Length: 159
Image (cartoon, rainbow, N blue to C red; front, side):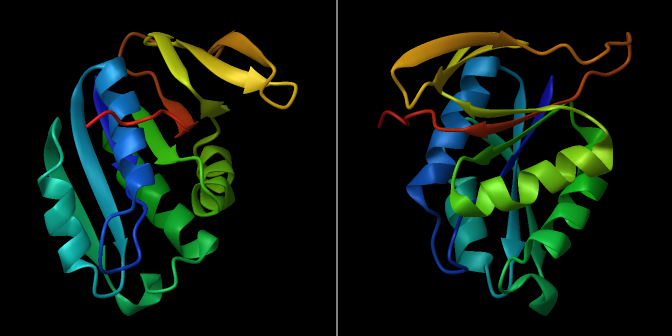
């Protein structure tokens, strides 16, 4: 399975939330690619290359992405996502802004706020203000060539 993790950063350094998303990707299993989108974000891309489990880093460094507007980022992620089975982003305000747009562009469901991975299509996520943990399974139609899921992750990275 190929997994695309969209990095959270400030164009200078990687945020810890990206490590959480990579931890979720590691739990799912597969080849992990990190997409760093921004303006002047080379340092963040270099930091992403140092994260354990990451096999490839894609860097979209352009002035159009400097402020990481949801419309611009979503269009790019949807275009890049064609080669991936799974797209993960941190469950931050930024990730929660563009990921639903990506899901709509790809016409797939989004499973938000995953906190645990049970299997490749089954996850745990908090409900009722975090008082209950629900186990949810993706119901997207599957064909034998590809399966695509979108997650926003609140997984905790363990150093």
